[in-house]
Length: 131
Image (cartoon, rainbow, N blue to C red; front, side, top):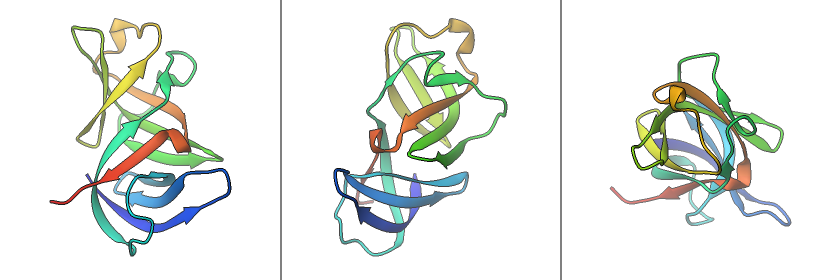
């Protein structure tokens, strides 16, 4: 996915954070690239380093479209959930696939449905790469 990096910031007791913009929202998340990059568009891979617990930080979404939004120090990520035969869960966020670390089980009826994830912004990471 290509994201627009507006700025990179470092706060005390916090990892490097990037203020980003996508076609479906904007937020601040952990940046795993160089701290001194100029503003601009960058191809990135997403990771979510927070355990997903259905009913706590993962819930059915009321809308069927990808979304990124900030709520205080948390990020709301809406995407389409895919459950695999071996019990893994993958979130489709605007065409990018993000592997989720699930604790417990996710109802099988949610396979293919839209879900909201409520995550700590430091646990959502962007890894830039070269095309």
